[in-house]
Amino acid sequence: MRLARRLLALAAFAVAPAAAPAETTPFFQGKQITIVVGFSAGGTYDATARLFARHLGKHLAGHPGVIVRNMPGSGSLVAALHLNTAAPRDGTTLGVVGGGIVLEPLLGNPQAKYDARRFNWIGGRTKDNIVCATWNRVPVRSMADVTRRETVVGATGPGSRTLTHPRAFNELLGTKFKIVSGYPGGSEITLAVERGELEGYCGWSVGSIVNRASSWLHDGTLTLLAQLTRDLPNVPVARDLVPTETGKRVIDFLSADVVLAWPLVAPPGLPAERVNELRAAFLAMMKDPELRAEAARQKLEIEPVPGPEMQSLVEQLYSAPPDVVELVKKISSAQ
Image 1: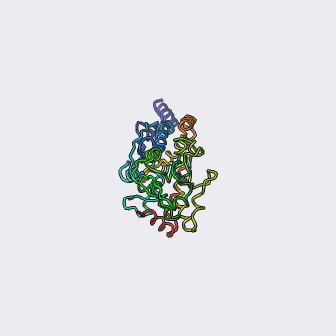
Image 2 (image 1 turned 90 degrees about the horizontal axis):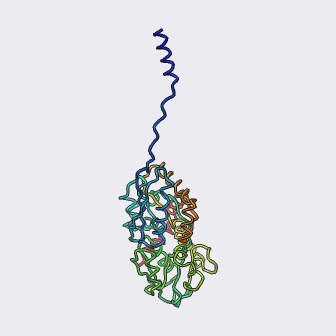
């Protein structure tokens, strides 16, 4: 009988269900994410980062808190360097930077000690159009006028389209833009234009203008000299103004910023599963009705650009023809 009971006990043990594996704690549970913004508070980059910060956490497993830290300097080059060298490589630090930071290593900027292909591009808020414009009191009505009259525009510094674009027009069209560099962000450039300290703003995103005052695009407040895409009626397209084929390809090269305009970026070296998790959370966030309602109130357009699309474009830029890169280098280094 004892033997029978032992055999029955062993049989029961053999068919008993295995213990369920312990649930894995989500990586982001109990953590805080910091979004570093490469520009000053109050501008559209800052508003974009704060929009992300208010909604990203609820779309990540573990629901981390998300805060914003402004790190302005050199057209967001300072923030890009922070992401590349100092930020933890685990997804707890992300960045909102200017798309132009992609170009700086290609153009030989000795401070740009990073490879933009190694950043993990999580996604973009929307594609954007970029314009060059002057205030209505300025006696300039076309790019041809700027070839005859010096026109003062503002810039944040190297790595920014606010510097590269007017230099490109000077080189390719013979314009006489005088560039005053060193503004911490686009909002300060805009204020300087309104106050009359500057006459115009090249590399101005249409999204930023709409966020400031959408009426400016059609009420005569601004004279729109050129745009990078064909979104706005009756505004010359920069590519069409340039007489040479190489020059047109330079404009195409600079137009990559239309796609990279409002990015969320992670440092190099993140585990692939973390990148995929962040990208999926980003796209889910972009569909969130609460985010969309808040964005509409702030006049921030939502038409998300998937991270892989941005990553592919960055790869293409690094494969640009040498003659185009050399001409953009010449433009970038102009005084």
